[in-house]
Length: 166
Image (cartoon, rainbow, N blue to C red; front, side, top):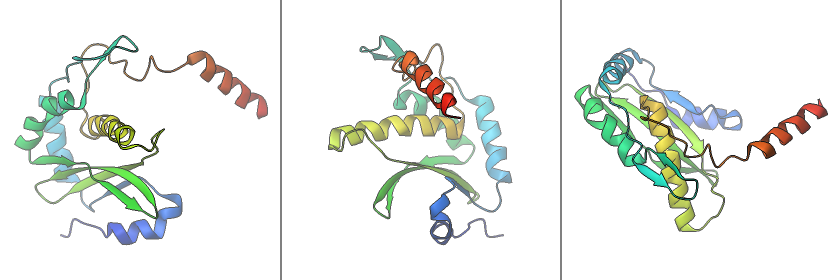
């Protein structure tokens, strides 16, 4: 059975309301392998430090170390290409299985600044979150990277203002 659908044709037809999840037609072997891999996966170590927010987090290398060997053992692999479509860049995370089955999610790249260092840092940040979400890696201890950066008072005020408009 053909396990691929025509992603480029499919995306062109649906681009105005782009659904970021695409997959092969069948997923049973992929999910069987993923469930076995997740049962054997270790937690990613929160061994990186964010000195600005005085927090620890699991960096991309730690997340990959916690998962790559067990994913490969079960015939699973991850690729994360950046693709451009209609002048917009997207990071895609594809989980593939040796059977040919796959599932993929995409997220638009909207870095706060357009210089190459900001773009590289932004892509690495998204790769970390998207990879962990796709394969089910969790981090040990407290992983506050991003959380302490949130100004809760400002967000709460924005939510309150939006509710008042309703």
